[in-house]
Image (cartoon, rainbow, N blue to C red):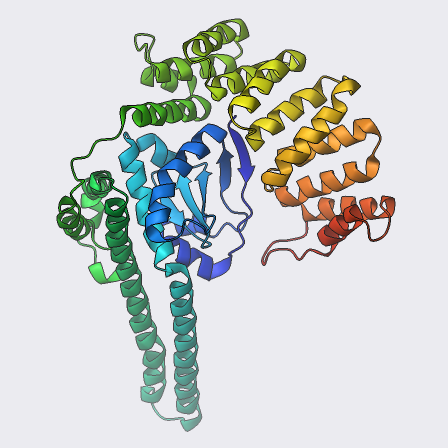
Length: 468
């Protein structure tokens, strides 16, 4: 189930812009980085499970296995990845689509893990704070010189010196900060290779990715001042990385064919959900009878309304792999979105069972149970949805469906609370507070529901975010 959510970024302003630009695989465009609302997020159980498998041995090698680092997929077709808050690695879906092998994507994750393991976020924020302090001092000294020149009534020499006192240190500070950022990128490259080698994986995919960046950016980098870049010059970077990567004893190690198959399935799924139908059929023509191609075509067929054909294709996938939870999930999602929720329930029950109760699949099943309008399903929907939101706390869909289930049961206090939680996760703070305030009047003072509602009413909005 591919879901689109808006991510509520907690880091805002100039610091967030510079941190994101520094710790990205490629520099972030400032116009995009300054959006306080944050990037839209894609959620999918299949893709997230595979990315966690990719990351687990790297985090273990980096000593971060117990830090609960999350991998977040960003709804952006460009090739990029970055860290921005110390506990998440963000990966554009474009990076997944353009990584032809698991090892190439694993190399990207290893580089970003290098930033986390090196504490680069905290260190960069400290550098930024020092730089801002130095800039303020330089500006005050320069302004003082300008004012003294004006009071003396003499020529412009003192005033010009004051202007130079402002501009000169600022340029030096900027170059020093950029140099620090370049050093962090080089350190992350080295750390990434170290973690890959320690986990018995090839750094070749990482090298191939940076070499592709080099080829793509040769023209843009021509004539650029290397001292005014936040990242090392492409050719120099890939040359340094090549020697390090080729020294690994696992340089020639290939991806396991079963892992490659899952990687191809993930890319096929993302292509089908995110790209135009004609693009999907160019990538996966009818002449391609591979399982990933059939998967992509089944998804795009259902998305474009040919349900009979889509169900036949999905059933053929299930017959091929009867223990694949994501084929049952797809069948249930297709039926649910076609307005046939009762028919979706058996497939979603099977998907939930095979996926070991994956929360996003539980939410989809809960949605189907609620959508049937059969009150006999209400208690089951509430039980499943409560289990889902307990483990998946940042998905508004679960709380929205939970609110509907409670409403059908006539439990309006819990319905208001769940609706408030959904609104809060969407970033709609005014609606969240209004609903939570109403929920408080329906709960007994001091009860668990009252306390949760009061927390929402009392929650501070993220800096820079307006009350809608």
